[in-house]
Image (cartoon, rainbow, N blue to C red; front, side):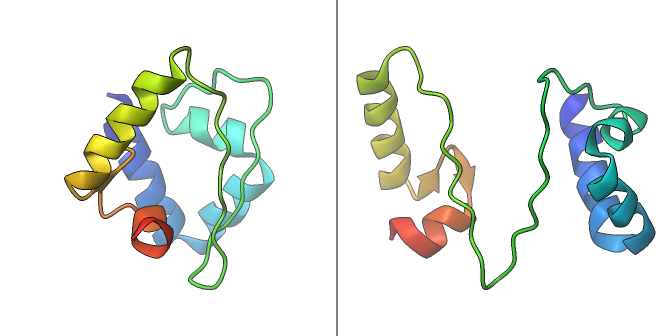
Length: 94
């Protein structure tokens, strides 16, 4: 399952400095070794810290109005992008 592979990958990155170094050097290869298929031609790794937050601009959805309403509804429920405890929400949205 892709979600489980992602969780395991993040745990490994957070707990194994050597693996983290290899992942930064070859994110595609290391992701694939961990069972995550990378379907885009380019993959860039950035490391967020408590002092630095990256604001990712995603490709726009087909229906921007519907997306906006959905996001506002999630924000009202204390969610950001559908995830509880989103770091962006905690630092910027509130």
